[in-house]
Length: 244
Length: 239
Image: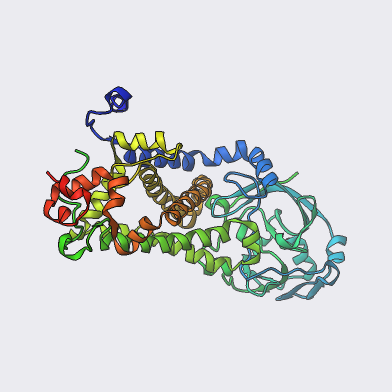
């Protein structure tokens, strides 16, 4: 193949050389690069993510392979809720329905995690710092009634919903988070309070959380109605991330 | 031997001598134009919805992620449909031949790249080297975007490592495709005669004499009567 190129040296230009299949080579080259990218992308992401991120932060445009969050909202905008008026309702099959303000959450037992945020479509942000109250602590305070089996989560945007089983909710790495990335959860990240479900894909970590309803059936949430699995274990298998 | 003569002339089914205005050549047949414009509309949709999904400022302020994602995914699954349909029947003749032109490079295509910087890039084939490389890149990029997009959206959740790689590639393709399409549109807008030919299929003989002389000779060889019946200085050059 290479000699076809060489035959095309300037001195040879006048003779009607055999056509060179540049188009085919271009196609194969692009497809080969794509194949390498698919196979090695996760490793490239891990190795180069932070350097790519410094470039993408500098230019203000997300770049392939960076460690930045992608921002999702399922409505035309997103709710901006003042911290001092925020309330999280816990109701349904509980002994004592709760209305927790931010100060209430801050006065409860605090839990911190450092763990990735993994989106089901593939992007991942490594080593995110999360802080808040364990979901199981919130449920314990409300007192779940014996027949309850599931939870529904509601977002202040009015559309986004999520679900967990009650046994999943007992895991030690599911947070009602009011801090992430070392600061209060910002409105674009779903603040003032969002869920963080470490062992599951990102869509489970509902943003702008304002209500937890304890029920006796799993009602699929927004993304689950859109075709994503209800059991969103990362990698397809249940796991618990023990955090020091 | 860049192409066997006789298939490009007159395009698809019609007799060019009778249906074409004097001094005009058939550049794109109806099948090619339908394939081009249906894919163009879908590509525009994909770029706009892709930008909304990808760029944080748009993702946050336009939002509606579920809807936008569905539009993007469905459009992406359909994107190559017109091309497949265009190649699926006896109407494919000219489309297939023009795709072959993208692949086969002769000396003039390499020369075009050498001279284009001096604003003298004169091509001899129907398409110049830049058009050929762009077509090949976009064709491959569309296939790669389809494969990576399907992995991102439909792969089982245990394939997350592949999905991460697919996301990397898909994001990179966003920039590559955007650049290629912007360049394509900018060149088209700055060359109205070529842009119009993608609407009505026709281009002037004088354009072909300057920019695609080898293609013009092919036409003349294959249909001497048709090609030379159009008047003009080139008329006498048929063999």
